[in-house]
Length: 404
Ligand SMILES: *Cc1c(COP(=O)(O)O)cnc(C)c1O
Image (cartoon, rainbow, N blue to C red; front, side, top):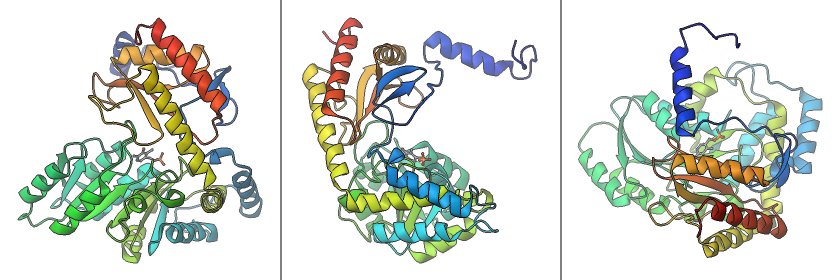
């Protein structure tokens, strides 16, 4: 008997879990027993890892590890306070300067995560008189930030700049400010947001333009500078959010923009004000990661070569990797669309049993009827590993009747 058993207060939670079990979408966390590598061990089983966001293999790059160890020896394991009290270390300032230089912007503020960067920024810069124009597939952290701001939320159809413009016209005569916001790369489908068109609209209607580049950081643009660089829109996007948790390999989120935007967030962003700053090891490893982005561009080339190869082979085998009733991927994020949540979870488990780790994703993370396995490529996968994964995917899909 678990400790809470028998107490009625939280019984309604147990009922929800039972419901998930009936629907076949309940899951147990898979536990990684070694490093986040192309081949590693989850729950005691060796698998080809096609599930992590460690796009460039930086999560265990020797230079990041060394940087983290050295910073820990010099500065200790914890920062001791929130940034605005006593927890701003020299290394935090150096990281922000490093990112601002890399992104070619005036200034940068680092948050504890990409989630807090988005939620903290949107909720700080808007109020209840204002309007947020948001792509329907934007990340949960943007939605939460929008809710916290109490601004009015107008959702435009996925990547539909025309629909965004209609909504901008609808609110053009309202007194509040307007914010247009899109993911640079959409995390579940892998398609690229129309940052160029939306930034042009924002300009025309005097709206603030914001991009969430969590999956574009280290992946899109020159040396992984992100979607604004990819589209050549430098100077046209007021707020650029990125993450340090995916391709950069460590943990954190950042906001890039004007000096005053960043100074304002120092004063008003609640996660910045009320939650302790990163351990020095995190800041040091992130700095090493930006050096590697500039010095080892071949990692990004390998990532894209693996992506082209793997997605091409999946299509040739007859898999639906998006593009029919779902958006078509344009990045290393590779959805294998299956439809029913139960099928996606079953296939994920079957793949795991045969040595391939691919995440099953169902409602509410993706819409009903669009459940999928999401496969993530990295620069570090070998051709041989990818071929073995492709062979396993095909065999399991045939056995389950997904492929003919
Ligand atoms: C992962 C993700 C985030 C959150 O980033 P973390 O650093 O993991 O908190 C924000 N936005 C998008 C689109 C993401 O995919």
